Image (cartoon, rainbow, N blue to C red; front, side, top):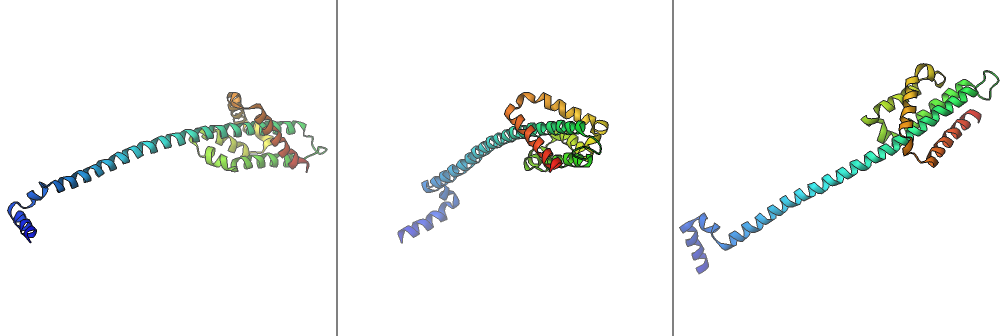
Amino acid sequence: MQLIKSFETTSSKGGLADVFNTPVSWIIFAVVGVIFIGWISYSYIKGQIDKKKLKKQALELEIKSKEEYNESLAKMHYIIKTNEKYLSEFTVSIGKYNMGTLTNTTQSIITDLLSEQYFKDLILFNVDYKKYVNHIITLKDNKSNNWTKKCNDSIIEIEKLFEQNKDSYDQDKLNDFEERVLKYYENKLFN
């Protein structure tokens, strides 16, 4: 009973100011302050860690995009060379394949390249490779027997880009790309 009377008299004497002067209230304020400062610190540190992760992911994506770009560039180089080879070997009427099959095969392999998932994800909508993609689409949209007349700029640009990046290729990979392109043509032209 004495405790209740003491509380009533304390609150009636000093009011709210006396509540804030008690050690318990200071402890509560200190705990709340520490929690608040801890939360602010945690948010800041987490933000910094997330920024580092994003930078690392962006760098990895850029490296992967460059690798895939170089691969598609090598494939396009071999598509152009293989197409030129079969065009030079073409003989009207008595040849082993007709011109329509050759141009359709070339268009088909370029369409396959454009529809590969890595190409869509990393190259197709990347602004750094927009010119390159436009050159590929120009070649795809024209028959391959007319490339030297209608799309020579695209061929020259792709070949120039390939030569600029030639040092970044592994010779075994280049041989693999060339072999795969040749097999694709042989399967379409002779089967």
